[in-house]
Image (cartoon, rainbow, N blue to C red; front, side):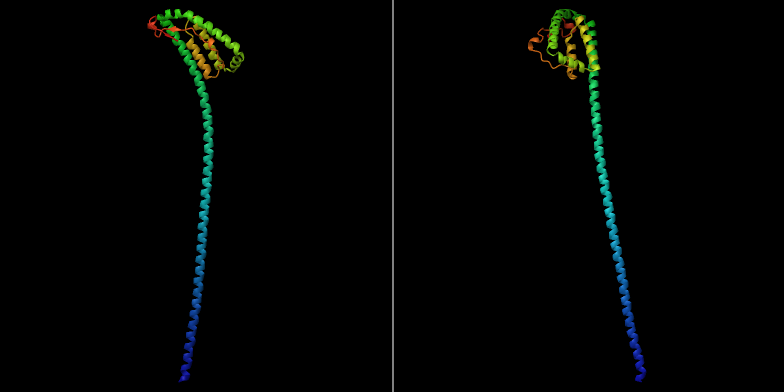
Amino acid sequence: MYSGIFPYGLTLFFQANQIQENLAARAQKMGEVVGAIKDTRDAEEDEAIRKAIAERELKESERLTREAEYRRSLVEEKKQVQREYVASETLRKAQERHLLKWDMMQRFKQEEMDREFEFIKSTERRGVLLDNRNTYKKQMVEVLEMKKQEREMDKLAVQRAAEAWSADDKAFLQYADEVIQDSRRMGRPIEPLLRIVKEYKKKNNLEPKVKLPPLLRSRVPIVQACHPKCAGRCSETN
Protein backbone atom coordinates (compact mmCIF):
# COMPACT_ATOMS: atom_id res chain seq x y z
CA MET A 1 0.00 0.00 0.00
CA TYR A 2 2.81 2.42 0.85
CA SER A 3 4.61 1.50 -2.30
CA GLY A 4 1.63 2.74 -4.34
CA ILE A 5 1.23 6.02 -2.42
CA PHE A 6 4.91 7.01 -2.39
CA PRO A 7 5.29 7.50 -6.12
CA TYR A 8 2.15 9.62 -6.16
CA GLY A 9 3.36 11.76 -3.27
CA LEU A 10 6.73 12.16 -4.88
CA THR A 11 5.07 13.27 -8.04
CA LEU A 12 3.09 15.88 -6.14
CA PHE A 13 6.29 17.04 -4.47
CA PHE A 14 8.05 17.43 -7.76
CA GLN A 15 5.05 19.15 -9.28
CA ALA A 16 4.88 21.59 -6.37
CA ASN A 17 8.59 22.23 -6.64
CA GLN A 18 8.24 22.78 -10.36
CA ILE A 19 5.42 25.20 -9.75
CA GLN A 20 7.56 27.08 -7.25
CA GLU A 21 10.39 27.22 -9.71
CA ASN A 22 8.05 28.39 -12.44
CA LEU A 23 6.63 31.03 -10.13
CA ALA A 24 10.12 32.14 -9.19
CA ALA A 25 11.16 32.25 -12.83
CA ARG A 26 7.99 34.11 -13.70
CA ALA A 27 8.55 36.55 -10.84
CA GLN A 28 12.11 37.08 -12.02
CA LYS A 29 10.88 37.59 -15.56
CA MET A 30 8.26 40.04 -14.39
CA GLY A 31 10.92 41.85 -12.38
CA GLU A 32 13.07 42.08 -15.48
CA VAL A 33 10.12 43.33 -17.51
CA VAL A 34 9.21 45.88 -14.83
CA GLY A 35 12.85 46.95 -14.59
CA ALA A 36 13.05 47.28 -18.35
CA ILE A 37 9.83 49.28 -18.38
CA LYS A 38 11.15 51.49 -15.59
CA ASP A 39 14.44 51.98 -17.42
CA THR A 40 12.52 52.81 -20.57
CA ARG A 41 10.34 55.29 -18.68
CA ASP A 42 13.39 56.88 -17.04
CA ALA A 43 15.08 57.18 -20.42
CA GLU A 44 11.94 58.67 -21.93
CA GLU A 45 11.60 61.09 -19.04
CA ASP A 46 15.26 62.05 -19.35
CA GLU A 47 14.82 62.55 -23.09
CA ALA A 48 11.68 64.60 -22.50
CA ILE A 49 13.48 66.71 -19.91
CA ARG A 50 16.46 67.13 -22.22
CA LYS A 51 14.20 68.17 -25.09
CA ALA A 52 12.31 70.58 -22.82
CA ILE A 53 15.58 72.13 -21.66
CA ALA A 54 16.86 72.34 -25.23
CA GLU A 55 13.61 73.96 -26.39
CA ARG A 56 13.71 76.41 -23.52
CA GLU A 57 17.34 77.28 -24.24
CA LEU A 58 16.51 77.70 -27.93
CA LYS A 59 13.58 79.98 -27.11
CA GLU A 60 15.73 81.98 -24.70
CA SER A 61 18.48 82.27 -27.30
CA GLU A 62 15.95 83.40 -29.90
CA ARG A 63 14.50 85.90 -27.41
CA LEU A 64 17.94 87.31 -26.61
CA THR A 65 18.74 87.49 -30.32
CA ARG A 66 15.50 89.35 -31.01
CA GLU A 67 16.13 91.67 -28.09
CA ALA A 68 19.67 92.42 -29.27
CA GLU A 69 18.41 93.04 -32.81
CA TYR A 70 15.67 95.30 -31.45
CA ARG A 71 18.18 97.28 -29.42
CA ARG A 72 20.44 97.64 -32.45
CA SER A 73 17.48 98.84 -34.50
CA LEU A 74 16.62 101.36 -31.76
CA VAL A 75 20.18 102.69 -31.75
CA GLU A 76 20.20 102.96 -35.55
CA GLU A 77 16.78 104.60 -35.52
CA LYS A 78 17.98 107.10 -32.90
CA LYS A 79 21.04 107.90 -35.01
CA GLN A 80 18.84 108.35 -38.07
CA VAL A 81 16.51 110.65 -36.14
CA GLN A 82 19.50 112.69 -34.97
CA ARG A 83 20.86 112.97 -38.51
CA GLU A 84 17.47 114.04 -39.81
CA TYR A 85 17.13 116.55 -36.97
CA VAL A 86 20.53 118.11 -37.72
CA ALA A 87 19.68 118.33 -41.43
CA SER A 88 16.27 119.80 -40.62
CA GLU A 89 17.76 122.39 -38.25
CA THR A 90 20.36 123.40 -40.83
CA LEU A 91 17.68 123.82 -43.48
CA ARG A 92 15.40 125.66 -41.05
CA LYS A 93 18.11 128.16 -40.10
CA ALA A 94 18.96 128.76 -43.75
CA GLN A 95 15.30 129.33 -44.53
CA GLU A 96 14.94 131.66 -41.56
CA ARG A 97 17.86 133.76 -42.77
CA HIS A 98 16.45 133.86 -46.28
CA LEU A 99 13.00 134.81 -44.98
CA LEU A 100 14.51 137.47 -42.75
CA LYS A 101 16.23 139.11 -45.70
CA TRP A 102 13.12 138.83 -47.80
CA ASP A 103 10.99 140.30 -45.01
CA MET A 104 13.38 143.19 -44.50
CA MET A 105 13.33 143.93 -48.22
CA GLN A 106 9.53 143.83 -48.32
CA ARG A 107 9.27 146.03 -45.25
CA PHE A 108 11.67 148.50 -46.77
CA LYS A 109 9.74 148.60 -50.04
CA GLN A 110 6.40 148.85 -48.26
CA GLU A 111 7.56 151.69 -46.05
CA GLU A 112 8.95 153.50 -49.04
CA MET A 113 5.63 153.11 -50.87
CA ASP A 114 3.77 154.32 -47.79
CA ARG A 115 6.03 157.34 -47.55
CA GLU A 116 5.54 158.13 -51.22
CA PHE A 117 1.78 157.91 -50.78
CA GLU A 118 1.89 160.00 -47.62
CA PHE A 119 4.13 162.57 -49.24
CA ILE A 120 1.79 162.95 -52.22
CA LYS A 121 -1.52 162.80 -50.36
CA SER A 122 -0.66 164.58 -47.11
CA THR A 123 -0.44 168.13 -48.42
CA GLU A 124 -1.09 169.51 -44.95
CA ARG A 125 2.34 168.30 -43.86
CA ARG A 126 4.22 170.09 -46.60
CA GLY A 127 4.68 173.15 -44.46
CA VAL A 128 6.27 171.13 -41.67
CA LEU A 129 8.48 169.29 -44.13
CA LEU A 130 9.64 172.57 -45.65
CA ASP A 131 10.37 173.96 -42.19
CA ASN A 132 12.44 170.92 -41.38
CA ARG A 133 14.41 171.01 -44.61
CA ASN A 134 17.09 173.26 -43.19
CA THR A 135 17.24 171.06 -40.10
CA TYR A 136 17.71 167.98 -42.27
CA LYS A 137 20.42 169.74 -44.26
CA LYS A 138 22.27 170.54 -41.05
CA GLN A 139 21.85 166.98 -39.93
CA MET A 140 23.11 165.68 -43.24
CA VAL A 141 26.23 167.81 -42.80
CA GLU A 142 26.74 166.12 -39.45
CA VAL A 143 25.99 162.70 -40.93
CA LEU A 144 28.50 163.27 -43.72
CA GLU A 145 31.05 164.40 -41.17
CA MET A 146 30.32 161.31 -39.08
CA LYS A 147 30.70 159.11 -42.15
CA LYS A 148 33.98 160.80 -42.91
CA GLN A 149 35.18 160.18 -39.37
CA GLU A 150 34.04 156.55 -39.61
CA ARG A 151 35.96 156.04 -42.83
CA GLU A 152 39.05 157.63 -41.33
CA MET A 153 38.82 155.62 -38.10
CA ASP A 154 38.12 152.21 -39.60
CA LYS A 155 38.63 152.02 -43.34
CA LEU A 156 39.88 148.47 -43.04
CA ALA A 157 36.76 147.36 -41.17
CA VAL A 158 34.52 148.95 -43.78
CA GLN A 159 36.50 147.30 -46.57
CA ARG A 160 36.26 143.88 -44.93
CA ALA A 161 32.56 144.33 -44.33
CA ALA A 162 32.03 145.37 -47.96
CA GLU A 163 33.93 142.31 -49.19
CA ALA A 164 31.89 140.04 -46.93
CA TRP A 165 28.51 141.26 -48.16
CA SER A 166 26.60 138.78 -50.26
CA ALA A 167 24.92 139.62 -53.56
CA ASP A 168 21.57 139.97 -51.79
CA ASP A 169 23.05 142.26 -49.14
CA LYS A 170 24.69 144.44 -51.78
CA ALA A 171 21.47 144.64 -53.79
CA PHE A 172 19.49 145.57 -50.69
CA LEU A 173 21.95 148.23 -49.55
CA GLN A 174 22.29 149.65 -53.06
CA TYR A 175 18.53 149.93 -53.33
CA ALA A 176 18.38 151.49 -49.86
CA ASP A 177 21.04 154.04 -50.79
CA GLU A 178 19.12 155.01 -53.93
CA VAL A 179 15.93 155.49 -51.93
CA ILE A 180 17.75 157.52 -49.28
CA GLN A 181 19.36 159.72 -51.93
CA ASP A 182 15.98 160.26 -53.62
CA SER A 183 14.39 161.10 -50.26
CA ARG A 184 17.23 163.47 -49.50
CA ARG A 185 16.84 165.28 -52.84
CA MET A 186 13.08 165.57 -52.33
CA GLY A 187 13.45 166.81 -48.76
CA ARG A 188 11.80 163.81 -47.13
CA PRO A 189 12.80 162.31 -43.76
CA ILE A 190 15.62 159.81 -44.05
CA GLU A 191 16.13 158.84 -40.40
CA PRO A 192 13.52 156.01 -40.51
CA LEU A 193 15.24 154.66 -43.62
CA LEU A 194 18.63 154.87 -41.95
CA ARG A 195 17.24 152.97 -38.96
CA ILE A 196 15.95 150.20 -41.22
CA VAL A 197 19.34 149.92 -42.93
CA LYS A 198 21.10 149.90 -39.57
CA GLU A 199 18.78 147.18 -38.28
CA TYR A 200 19.40 145.12 -41.42
CA LYS A 201 23.17 145.46 -41.05
CA LYS A 202 23.00 144.58 -37.37
CA LYS A 203 20.92 141.44 -37.94
CA ASN A 204 23.22 140.29 -40.75
CA ASN A 205 26.52 141.22 -39.03
CA LEU A 206 27.36 143.77 -41.71
CA GLU A 207 27.93 146.77 -39.46
CA PRO A 208 31.56 147.65 -38.52
CA LYS A 209 32.10 147.65 -34.77
CA VAL A 210 33.04 151.34 -34.50
CA LYS A 211 32.16 153.36 -31.43
CA LEU A 212 31.86 157.09 -32.13
CA PRO A 213 32.80 159.59 -29.45
CA PRO A 214 29.89 161.58 -27.98
CA LEU A 215 30.98 164.78 -29.74
CA LEU A 216 30.20 163.22 -33.13
CA ARG A 217 26.59 162.37 -32.26
CA SER A 218 23.86 164.51 -33.79
CA ARG A 219 22.45 167.19 -31.53
CA VAL A 220 20.09 168.74 -34.11
CA PRO A 221 16.43 168.26 -33.08
CA ILE A 222 13.93 167.00 -35.64
CA VAL A 223 10.36 168.24 -35.45
CA GLN A 224 7.57 166.37 -37.21
CA ALA A 225 3.79 166.54 -37.03
CA CYS A 226 2.35 163.51 -35.25
CA HIS A 227 -0.60 163.45 -37.67
CA PRO A 228 -1.22 165.01 -41.11
CA LYS A 229 -4.24 166.98 -39.87
CA CYS A 230 -2.48 168.42 -36.82
CA ALA A 231 0.42 170.06 -38.70
CA GLY A 232 1.24 173.35 -37.03
CA ARG A 233 -0.75 172.51 -33.89
CA CYS A 234 1.16 169.67 -32.20
CA SER A 235 4.57 168.08 -32.78
CA GLU A 236 7.09 165.82 -31.16
CA THR A 237 10.85 165.94 -31.03
CA ASN A 238 12.78 162.85 -32.09
